[in-house]
Image 1 (cartoon, rainbow, N blue to C red):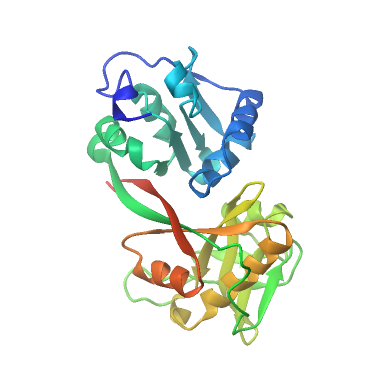
Image 2: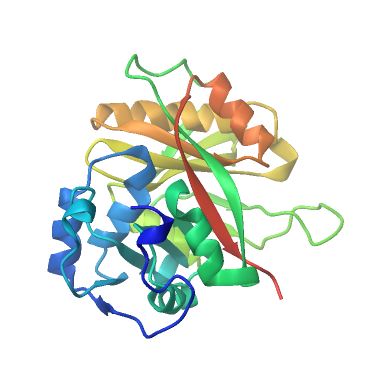
Length: 283
């Protein structure tokens, strides 16, 4: 499915795509191959809270071989993914509840025409761990944060002076946590691994999305502890945990994030694919 397959890429005409129920979404996810580029899209399809639009009429035979086109959005995570050539009106409708949009490279140009200057796209390198096992052992102490633990940490740079301020808080002993971490901690299939500096957790690694055989990892690190090996320790522990559960880690990094690309290489991840991440432009 290339750029020319969309019938309303220029924005003319009304949307021919319709909302799809959970049964359709899960059947579609089951039919999609378990590829590193598709982990987030497949997980959103299976999520009861997601919204999905897809063509009402059957796909032509040449498109059916690669699966249906659709756009799926997870409003709680403000994330959307497009698979296949876009319908302009449907895409704009779906991303109204998202701040980020995952797009396959073959559909990037069509998406740019649909969304115009309101969104900015950046190339993303998708990596996967080789099947030969975890690259090494963590250099720092690591622990898995359980749902009812006693770990609390504040981390995030201040608006100008770089000082750490409590704008993001992880506390598993009863205090408020951000919705992102609350959702992660409530799912026993999605643990958070923390690397410690003494008694203080300073780097966190967690699967942002999982499939049957893959897990897309994300890492957050206290700014004062960047480039000191804590992110690598958390990532290595998460890789081992995934391997125990029969999954291989996937690592995606935008071209501008040289630190993430370098860490992926040092940990032995191999580039296997590419996607584009569109981010809503700031007002």
